[in-house]
Image (cartoon, rainbow, N blue to C red; front, side):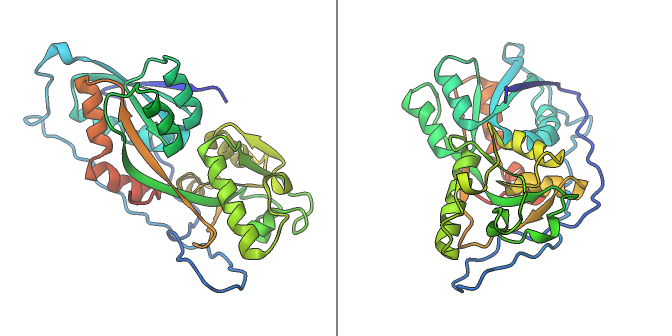
Length: 307
């Protein structure tokens, strides 16, 4: 999937969320030692909405150094699209010297390669340590990478799929359980694809089922999790293994049903940030990523995990 670019003005409005209409399940289940096949319940996810910090007219910050004015360019894992769309206005309201944010989204590994090859960027947000290592090993980043969140896998199901009520475990993604089911995964080189591979490997071991492989269940592969999520939301696929944060965002909007994976099958991945220069705008955005306010919003509103 091609990388998209979103530029936002400092006064742009926050994305309007639709009201929740479906139920979602709770956070990650604990690992189980039982050899019985676990089933996954669907329960309500946190509905807490954090109040935005609105400065008063007297305390609203002003850009005191005009030479610091300018845009900041962020290349980020596509699983961060919903987060940044929602929270970018908060950052801009607190950093008047930043005139806009230019976002480019895609697979972390693809973005890392673009950065090493000279793509202009201020901040890199990766959903993979290995993708961040590509940048670090090329010595193109100006600041050490830091982990600000974690995520994990979940089965995302098209809500009007004929197979919706039949999918409770990874085994149900195989044709032997549900003949004709259309399943998608991210490509293996993408962080979401690597996550799916680990989940499938754990499932083969736990269920003693050697058919639970990428080639055994996947009818199609997507370049990024954003592309895979879109295919499921549109009904082009019945199900797929995506990030928990993406499924939990889609489910209250009637775009997906989410199936939780047991702890002894699921795996998590780290989200990291780094800067390519020492511009004030770059430093400000990195501080925003690493702030307790941002991390809390990730966990409460978007179902990410603590770092």
